[in-house]
Image (cartoon, rainbow, N blue to C red):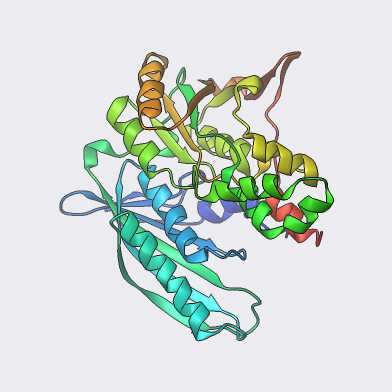
Length: 336
């Protein structure tokens, strides 16, 4: 198989075999849903696991953020984090300690407790890998699912795309970008997206839940905006129509993608939050986001499943693009 997420068809076959008899499982493994939700005696427990498998100088900080994002997308609050750190034999004790310092600082910044995990030097790997598990809580009447979108909902995306993939490429492939004609200043600006506006959607989600009747939220990650939209549609059993001209592609992303021959719509895009909600609530949401310094953009509408997944362009409607794997994974695995 190619590097990246399992193909959706394979994942559907695997998950179809999962049989859950425990009635306390409110949300189990489903295509498009990124968290498990469990019934407890009081509030609901939200659980999320996600790895960070690429090389980055901020891998510990990164692992906390990406796992917290998915808990926030349920309307919940991230509370407890567990980290499994695997490092290659060449790793030094100072490097290992630095990664854990990143984890603890990231947890502290969002009021999350690091409660456990595992660490080891692992044979056969050439870079550090972190598997993170985030646990959180959400009130039973405030749970939001990816699959909660309703026909007629407007689709809003925050910040712009593709923050994460652009920043990683600028940090990991600076020499290739220089050779392609980008300036060091442009590369540095793209790399800084990792911190400003950053990849966390915790605040975006909290503002959305406090200001509008949110039906669905989804963190845009591997496979980019288009894959995130497809996951919302799949989980909700609906179609959607996206206005191509309304999609907020960041200028830094456009420059990096043009330099490396990538499509921004399929590039890893953590930092952007997809929200579906009644059209009447959109102005209030956008105003509330703007008041918190967060850009918001209305990009489309949820429609009947029979109408499919559409990209509305100047010359008419075309099928929404589909990416078999993330553009970052495609580029990295090419050996370029």
